Image (cartoon, rainbow, N blue to C red):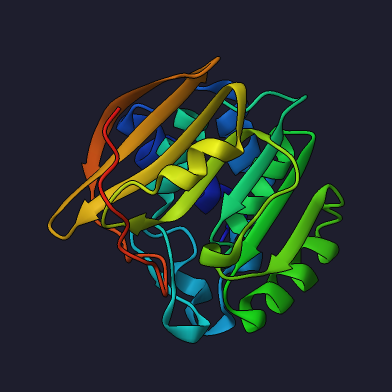
Amino acid sequence: MNIELTRERMIYHQIRPWDVSDKRVLAALAATPREQFVPETYRRLAFADTSIPLACGQTMLKPVLEGRLLQALQVEPEHQTLVIGTGSGFLTACVAALSAKVISIDIHAELIHAAAIKLADEKVHNVELQNLDFNNLKPDTGFDRILVTGSMPLFDERVLEWLKDNGQLVMITGTAPNMKVELISRSAQQYTRESLFETVVPPLENIATPAAFNF
């Protein structure tokens, strides 16, 4: 397999046709070797339009969904970003290519350990990995951008407290088969909520079911 040709086809025949046109996002996807973050058993599927099994019963999202989430996040080079759900580490690596600093958490120590090795191999130095349950997350700083890579049955209002002014949060809410990717933007103490598109992804593990939050 010609890796670079296959990567180019993934970007230009899968991701771009799904309304991903941000040049910085496309460049990050092109420069981050997705195949290195895929378990060796499934490496032949690294550029396929499919989710990929990971250890601990987790999955790596489809390339098209990764592209759409990255574009929706609108990360700038000076941003401090939180990624909830490290998984394979690929999305974290892409976010790191777009922002100044990334904190990425995952409930599974095995996934954090594997991601740490891969990020080090790729010389990604602006990521702090934490083996942490989302329910126990209590950041001591705010973030410009937050990306939640697994779904939540209902919006958890705690996440709003972690956004800086003018910050943005991208997350997936709902239960299968009715899930949607949402963009929440903060301006002072006001929040706006926009539904972007529908999808279905596995929920965050051990996720609590919070009371519904009304904007």
